[in-house]
Length: 387
Image (cartoon, rainbow, N blue to C red; front, side, top):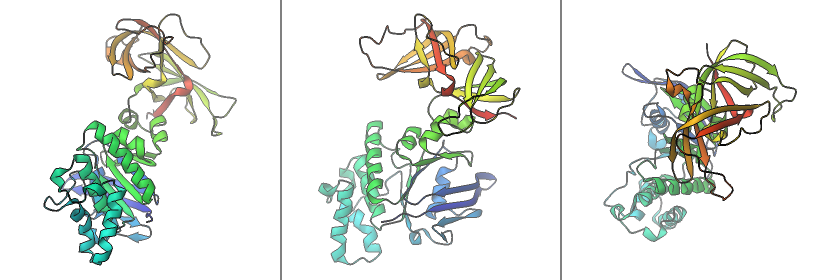
């Protein structure tokens, strides 16, 4: 099987007076695992339904390779859909559910059994062929739905939050299996999810959506490390996000690893004071920007101040709340001498410390401890320039 390039051009959709999609443009590459990620109501499922043929846009075009598929009914498009609720026939066996599309397409009987068993083997259900859906676990039902969706050899597989009905551990297991299936068959997967971890784990690229708009398209690394808006920074993982004013901008002698010119920017952040951050875009002195640093990028320590370099940010604080979660502890640290004490939440920095529990790891950090927080200027990021 081979996949299709999927090109979405100027697609808009309204339900009554409510605009669901605002002039969406996306290029999805052949064989790519592409995710549409965003909160409930952002328009991602409506966009997927337009690709499947269950909804029609008010404007725009959807191209599978070089063909506009919008005039085509769902059953004529080179795509198939895996739904959140499995949509299996309860009175049919696993074998009969998977074989159903072949019967509809009038495939010769002698070809049906080997093909059904091929796809049941692909999803590791060959030993469950003659069970009914009510005899299967949630994960097994979803694998049946995936096999049924793939058996007609579509060029594009559309997945509408297929794992959301599963418990957390099973969801992680199924996610790995789904990625392995994609690697084996090589067609284009378009995956809708509101779960950032799912999207980051399996996607080649991600489109982050909110309120009917695509805010950023990029690899998981680009989306996480270089968010383009405040919303993307806050929605993808956890982060510390502050507004500040550029008070100094200095061009650095050496370009970054990609060869781009780099600048050292000093920001005046009301809640913290002066923060150093590197940037590849020119920032003018006096501009207001939003600044982010991920909690896991921050070093937390007790005792004496860490060794300082010119590019290190250093703050002192008091542990306001430690939250233990087994493999890590999240600390909310209230910065000492916060410039905006009336708004105590603005004075909090979140820090995540992974647990190694080696004997030389140092003393445990506890509630009300005095601590140092430090991070490199290169580990922060200027998200937006405010108008």
